[in-house]
Length: 154
Image 1 (cartoon, rainbow, N blue to C red):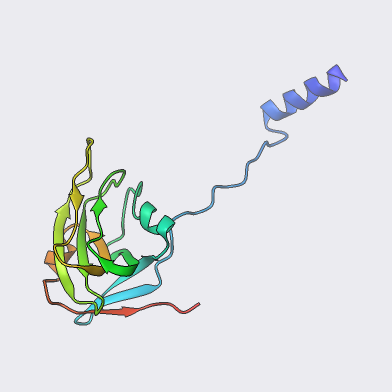
Image 2: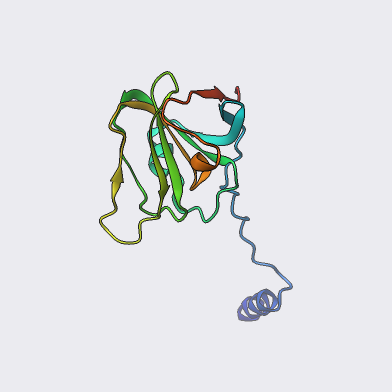
């Protein structure tokens, strides 16, 4: 029995028997939903559950250009956001229930030390759109612009 165990260990170490673990699942979501402003569209992931909203874009090292995340809440409110564990700078755009931009926090940097600043709109919002920093300015998004959402149907 000892010889059999020794042969197994030797085979394992030499690569004859591969000790494999399942490849890590690709956790980068596919964005199929579109958020548009005056014909200019962004592909977005939709965060509509509490868990999805809490995770947001945390721990992402990169966000493709013209992509983002749309946070959808159950009720309008002054929803608060922070950049803890968020590694990329973002534009945060708050929108009311009709999809009208009510507030923008542009070029919000990642939080490097605690406590992290908290960002929120002075007006109630039902949605918050996060984009790469500078996208709001690049595409001239402003207060009063209307969002058109095209969600992928299940």
